[in-house]
Amino acid sequence: MDKAIADVINSPIKNMLINGDGIDKIHNFKRVNRLIFRKLKRLVATLVLVFLCSPFTGISQGFELPEGKPFQKVKFQLINNLVIIPMTVNDTELSFVLDSGVGKPILFNLTDQDSIKINNVSEITINGLGEGEPIKALSSKENDFKLGAIHNRDQRLYVVLDSDMNFSPSLGIPVHGIIGYELFRDFVVDINYASKTIKFYNPAHYTYKLGRKDETLPLHVIRKKAYVDGEIYMNSGKNIPVKMLLDTGSSDAIWLFENDEIGIPDKNYDDFLGKGLSGNIFGKRTMVSGIKIGSFVLQDAKAAFPDMESFNDIKNLGDRNGSMGGEVLKRFNIVFDYPNGKITLRKNHNFNNPFQYNMSGIDLQHDGLRYISERITDASGVVDSEKKSFGDVQILFENRTRLSLVPEIIVSGIRAGSPAESAGLQEGDVILAVNGKSVHRYKLQEIMHMLNAKEGKKVRVLIERYNSDLLFTFVLKNMFKEKP
Image (tube, rainbow, N blue to C red; front, side, top):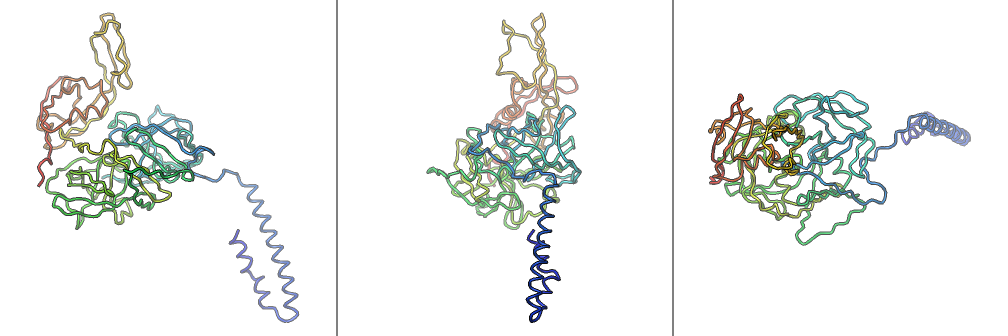
């Protein structure tokens, strides 16, 4: 409306006033006032008419809590260092990774069995990390998102239809999407990694109550991403200041970008680092002497140098030196305060835990379901509820044999030169047991822990290959125990 009024003032009517002279100036002045008044009156009437005739959809306020509710507490699952939260989208209950490295929410892993309504759809192309090409997706507006009492009635989201974009098999539970920036933008987000709870506070009602062990640092929010300053202690003894992306959607510790200051340590090996929207990400796995954030120092820290080809489609890396993921972040309870540009850290019981390396060289994932038969030892025939696997289907026969339908765990990848590869394990092998324990009784991350418990441990793996059962034995090896 300001522009419309400016157009009136800058119209030929204004020139009539300026060019008037003598008595005519007074006459012109009155006439101009009447003309301006009539034109403004017509303009206001037109604006009111447009407003009344346009469909009213409301003004998007983002995610909000009900009036009078200061915060929403949410339980989450911590799986492979990732925060998994429940989210209802258009009345369908889904699971999302809370990913501070993503802007708009992204849905994927939608199968023929999934039923979810999405609104106002158009086709787009999006870029992401990975070695592949940009991918086609759907853009959808005016979607209804709920997280407990938190509500957003007009959320835009993207839907990736590529069936290969699926994190569920490697996490062991159904995961349907990622969501990040817009929750962090609208709330002060208090993530307690120790208790696996998050509190989303209304920023207007949040009061800082800093404990003796809390430390508040500047948080730089640039183009919907959050960065923190720190230091990397290189094995050479050199300390290098770094600017790191805070990425709750990464299960790794830290990724570093090689440059004139930051070089790849001599001790490293080629490794699969993860999966991005545009495909697999590979790089060099290594270790640095330490990471410093504020006054907190993590010694002998796990690190990786991703192949920079994976970032070809990502613009505006700027002066960023890398990213800090869940294996570092889970060692703190963290308050993310995007609105005020602050982050508060308090170390928790995970702080001094050693960093986890894949010493076996095996990657696992769920690959559908399989039947197993077991003799029933319990006279009642009742199965211990704590040992049930997700999706079990059980049938009891008169000869007291139980036939169960359980998740099938397969070797999805194997690192060249690793102990497992040297022992003869192959991609596609079906894992039946580790150290005599049947894997169907355990969660995927528990099985990975069995395979990578500690350096020097002998591991026995029973697998099925081409309908034959084979037993392999190897010893776990830490590639970085001896520093160069």
